[in-house]
Length: 440
Image (cartoon, rainbow, N blue to C red):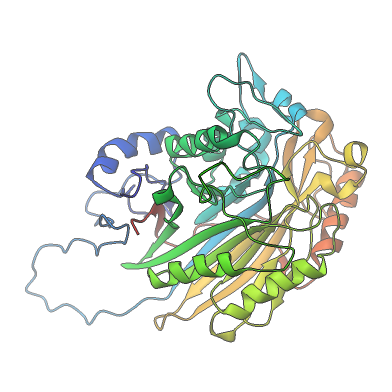
């Protein structure tokens, strides 16, 4: 069975209410979803509610009362929605110290300046690079990470709908850490892709559903990593972490997952790929080969890259579904970390990229994607607060206008000019969205 997890829904003011995967999830999950401050109000009186079936696919809205007036011929609407994604969430020990609050941790203040950008998206995906520390153990930073459980709840409160979890640090705390991570995601009502607690769970695809004028768009999120820092995959559990052979640019597991999602009815597939060379702004030849093979497959609509810890180019490759091209963000840098020139010798590590993708799905099921980017930076010396910045931001936090402008320039130089800069938070484009995993 698909795990019963709370729905995490949001949308415009006219949004449908929170929907859940089953009667149990509807009764139990809604309370949990409200605990993480969902971004939309409950359904207004008289608004038809769209509910999923047990398989995770969406059912049609319940028909209203019969009318003697002839109904107009139904038309298939064009659906437009936005997705925001960020770089690595990498809580080093000093970052956790900045989040200290009494006997626990509160990461909310660190995320606050970016919250409007996150809440303005129909779907928001983060990348949690580290496991959660198992119960009975203490949080830890580099080299063997284990973040406090409150980090996941705080990500939900900041507006994120889910995260990719496949990374080179996925098994830093062994299988117990992997279990703790996904238990925490489930409790917070967030989606996740890349790791699994059971063999059955490893075969499930993380879906995000977008609703517009009675039409449902099904988006799959898949997540893979190049390796595990030399650590073994948990014994007897080869399914617990999604990995692929990056050395040979063998993307077969990624494409197999994309094929499975397409066969299961996914209209859109987004791939998060944690790979390749750290601390260089230009993607390696292997990294380019990996992205191009994925584009050539025609199975993936958007490629989101992680692991470099510095911003890398955003480009549109040949191929993609329908041979219309595929956008690739080779590396989104660090969203939250303690890295900068003084800690790792690379000044770009203090920066990240917030990717905003706009998907348009026509009545004929043709999908087009447009992307933009927003630079982010961490005020490392004053609480590790993350700020969105632009060329004309001026001073933010404790960072001078000159420092902000210099950091923005580093991001702009790395990203390139293929995509457009986004300097203001967006607004919801679809009626509503929510997530759920399906039963294979």
